[in-house]
Amino acid sequence: MTGDRQALRLTVLAGDGIGPEVTGAALHVLETALQSAGIDLVRSPQLIGGAALDATGDPLPEASLSAACSADAVFLGAVGGPAWNSAPVRPEAGLLRLRSGLGAFANLRPVRVWPGLEKHSPLRPEVLRGADLLFIRELTGGIYFGRPKGVAGEAPNRHSVDTSEYSEMEVRRAAEVAFRAARQRRSKVTSVDKANVLATSQLWRQVVTEVGQEFPDVSLEHCLVDSFALRLLQQPGAFDVVVTENLFGDILTDEAGALTGSLGVLPSASGGGDGPWLYEPVHGSAPDIAGKGIANPLGAIATVALLLRLTVKREELAAAVEEAVAAVIAEGLLTPDLGGSESTESVTEAVIRRLPVGAAA
Ligand code: NAD
Ligand code: IPM
Ligand code: MN
Image (cartoon, rainbow, N blue to C red; front, side, top):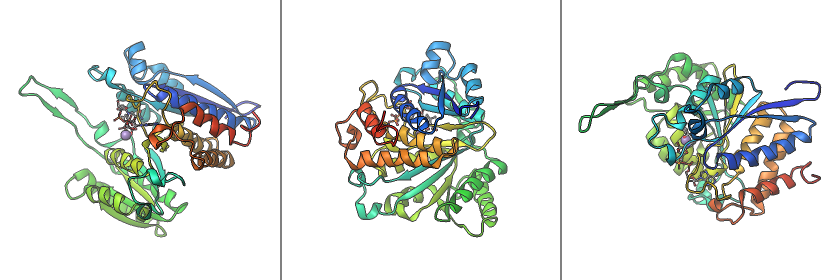
């Protein structure tokens, strides 16, 4: 935040597929919320993903990374899509470099079931009751960043390799985020690993246990990832904060997305290092619905609430956005992924009308 009149300098990486659609919606909500507090939104749109590949040959051009690193916060829509399936560099590689370049090692993915969406969950209401989780996904280590990687050789003798590596420091700092978050919630951490097979998970379990001893007021349980995937469907209400490595966190949060009715409603925020925080909905570029104007904007809009809470540090603005989202859902104004017939734009406008300042706008 800079200047006489307060301003939020936001690097905007809309990306591919529905990325630009949900980003437009989110920024409209953000601008309205900031206006009510006399804060200007200064946007710096930059290229990432397939759009950046097409324009520059690089999924994260230097200009995008340096703009992101010097912003107050970064907002990302989504990257990737079938158009780049056989590209030598994938759009997704740009996102990984961005996360790493920002030092965004802790990915916060809250999972809640908005009242009114229970009937869209595949779980029965009595199973779903009490589900309110916060995933802390380690985001800049593990198999996503292992070396060497790639496919080599000629058919039928091709081979490929991915490696997973974690240092004690990487596990410790992710665990610390989880325990600190648990203190603000229900004081329970579940650490998810595959310690019966993987060396990285054995280290993960040891280090998380040691960090847990520094937080005696927070209870800690360890759970193997396969049985956690099962328990998440059987008793989602049994968990509070869940901390896990990069790949497991990716998979389990999509699973958790189903519980809430649609992946399209899940928000996320990533940070922890020296760089600005990165805000992105959990979902991808959804090529199957891109360009139709029907993408659910609520994950991106709920991500705006996280930005207002964590970067702008205005809890009342964050709460106002979440209340507006809750009201829109309660009134049944839903996009097709939730069985409705609203558009991205009409849902966004409905959210804005329910913001204290939006009603007057
Ligand atoms: P996806 O998340 O894009 O879509 C999965 C399903 O959820 C699809 O049926 C889609 O229509 C639906 N969906 C997702 N977001 C929605 C929304 N906001 N509203 C309504 N429905 C929504 O996953 P995918 O199809 O496996 O991946 C497509 C591309 O997106 C891939 O290239 C993948 O790498 C990329 N991806 C990017 C990110 C990111 O940029 N953060 C995240 C996940 C996937
Ligand atoms: C996510 C996505 C990304 C990930 C991809 C696009 C690199 O699935 O943000 O969940 O795996 O982290
Ligand atoms: Mn994912």
